[in-house]
Image (cartoon, rainbow, N blue to C red; front, side, top):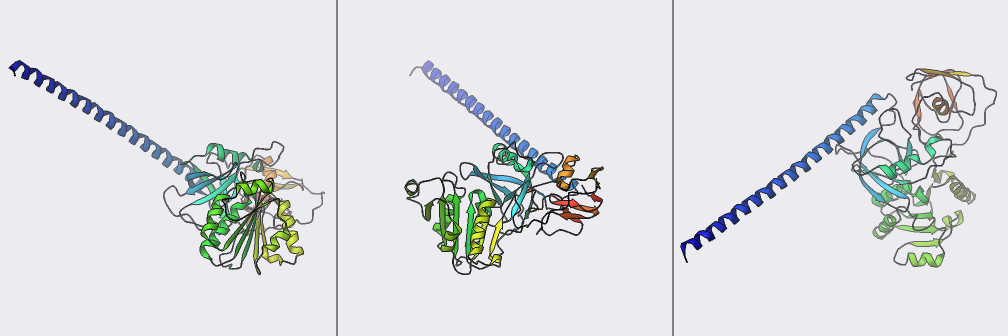
Length: 422
């Protein structure tokens, strides 16, 4: 082959190799830049996250009202449980173990916003006690503008559903609550739930299945339909795994034929309509304890039916938020009330209380002083503050353990001039 041909081929090979080197080098530069950008983003994200956690911890530490064990948690996972219910899994941001709790207890949740205490709500823990994570299952409730109590209008549930994402941080208090399954209790269980009232019941159920696998357990679950069946699929999976549980679901808005078509491949009992106390008794093993959670009117009806059937009152337990729950009302006081001086010490405000229908929590809010709140019915304990001076009385009996210098402001009225540490 003539020399010029070899020279031409050599030049082409060299040019191709140089072009390949240039291309490979360019790809390498792009890759390195992409890796660096990703690392910078991750670093910035970690820094922002660390700064947010530090800010929230500082907010807690700066508050003298942290008697409820407020802590920062990170949202690790979010799961849709039904059309309007969503589960939020919480972990410690630094990877530490979370405190233990009693199955059935609740957390108090408030937005991780700077400044004064924001609206706070109570949400039952829907998972079995676990040091790795906590779970709450929240029903989205659209705000009702006709409501006068700001923590009952659904704004926080909508905020959680619409705003919170994996990686975000929240402030939670607790766990707390008198409604729970005692871990020493080994009696057969009949668990009754309506709608999102399944949340504390699911916690009790899972704990009982894990720790007392030979115990008889019956769950009667009242829902509207299978689109509004929060945690229903999880309960089905538990029934398949644990043979000592009987799950019975009652759908009030589904005809029996339709319900049978929808549940043909599911285990457990499915019924159209609503269950009554009489039906509950038919499913009840001897010597069982009853635990129920749902709307107050529904629980009252079931409870009355059980007591009429001579079920011992100490075996009937229930959870109520937004109502009087287990706290009987105390006789109403005279409307002829002398004005009483109330001082909010930290806020440096003082006003004269004279309305016997107005709780100290409502009076504080009227006076421009924000106190954390949850149930506003003396059940959750979120509104308790230190009573530096004076005495208070309550409009219903309370079952929460308070220190001698604490009071529940949402159900308390001043008996004498008072000074509150808020």
